[in-house]
Length: 387
Image 1 (cartoon, rainbow, N blue to C red):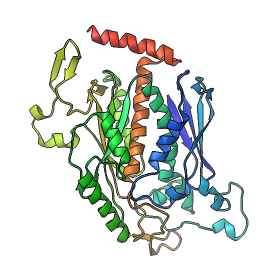
Image 2 (image 1 turned 180 degrees about the vertical axis):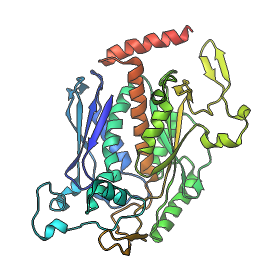
Image 3 (image 1 turned 60 degrees about the horizontal axis):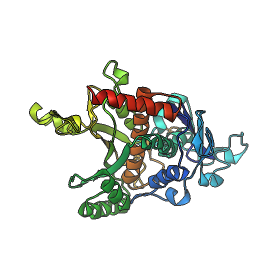
Image 4 (image 1 turned 45 degrees about the vertical axis):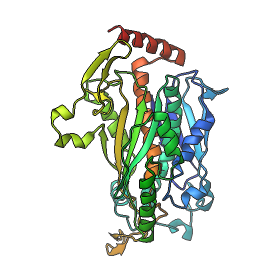
């Protein structure tokens, strides 16, 4: 499977096309839009989330509630477009409107300057409009479709915030359904109520200072069979593909699986997961420090992916930059921004990882219809059970 997205942050709409999705998968439209609604929530979001109420329309590839095997086309309209119809019009505009809201002062931490130099654009709006994290709206919609394929096979997706700024949660183990329920009720998507209050206070303090906060988020996928991905080529390793996808999310700067970077300070006996066997479970691991992967392949344990989101680059207490016209030092221009988007980024992470797992699932058990995939899947489970 593959997908493409198109559209700008202040354009008329965002568009996505999914290719290779199997037929006869029941699509719950409310579930797709539920994921989009989750992306818009979270303490620390800015005014854009009050303007938009993201809703995906499926305009191809689904009939009578089921996929047909044809490419799935999705559209999310931008409500804010009505304020930008002149500035973002695709037609040539004569006169003063042509330079209206032109961006000539690149913001540190954004794609503005690099993109302007690369594509020879003297109005940096042509870069920031596409490089904006608004693009992740469509990736969440795509992930919302992928999750429904995973659901057909009992695979569950959850996420939580681990850290915002200097505040870190106390780690607790709990069933995935309980984790989903608790984090969905938290404005910062945590299970630790003490940390929740401290995080909210930290976000308020950063906003007062005109500053921003980043953090660490975690995605957990449960119910994945052993053997997704492969060891035979570097680009077939599923953990590597997930890592690439995660780092493609705007403002993400690091990724780890299981205990991740902590493994650097531990001895091997404290890092690797001992293998066990019993008649009921078959082969399993005594722990899951590897985060569900060995040799680029799933072990059958939970996939645990953790990612770092840097503080958002647009600061109301703007940083210094250089005007691309005059080459003089200047205070960077300010676009509308959030103080902290870490809780929302957790939703994006879930859906990005869900897509990669669904894609690997299709590669392993591929078929043109969900019925064919199920036959392949059940046959494989019998093979593993009798090993």
